[in-house]
Length: 314
Image (cartoon, rainbow, N blue to C red):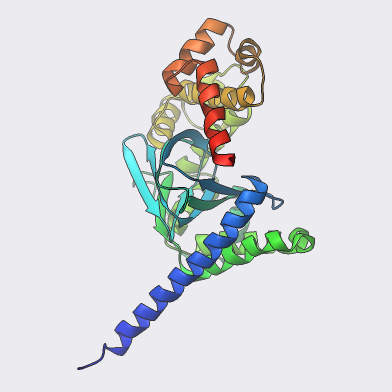
């Protein structure tokens, strides 16, 4: 019987090695997620461990997410992005996303890591990055998925391993994080990241506006001033903001406010106080918007979330 061609054997070996590397890193992430929860001592690095399919509504910050086990579906507007073990998703600007954990169980939980993307740090790397044009003619997509390539997987592994070496984090973590940004910039998703790294592209301007709204969500929103701040006409700003985020600036602010409200309620803040803290002038208006977005009034929604967290911890 004839053997496989050398090239085919080579691809098979690479696939087996990738599978083994993913399993090893999944075991490391699982161990640390159980110990630490989501937050880690490495700035910008979060771990996710989920034992059952679930829906998550949130506003993604610019970030890089690598799935090591399980699968997830993220929806932005009418576009759905499915990614599983050995794949990544990159969010290049702040965008509202409804996500569903698709594959997760108690014996094989969904395991993923996410790392915040520093757009300013990306811009510093641009002059040394491989040449690639940025076309303003094509519709910009804030989310993209791709395979987790070997060099990127290696860097992710070294970053996760630092969780076992806390004395090395301060020196080595920034170097590895910079390497990850470099490899993303020179990989398949590089063109998308250039859109937001080059200051004068429409995507970059919308990104700065979305970031400002997120940081100042509790303040009155004057869309004309926001458009002026990023150097766009009001009509152009409205059009491109909605094209990128799927929402108007006012709708975007409302969603960010509600996400912050949910976080505060989980920390045991009073419902009435939370509504006023995030910028609502009426407690009934706040409760109505909250119910429309999350599907239940604040008290009932938070009780369900706490029960789910208790099951995960048990």
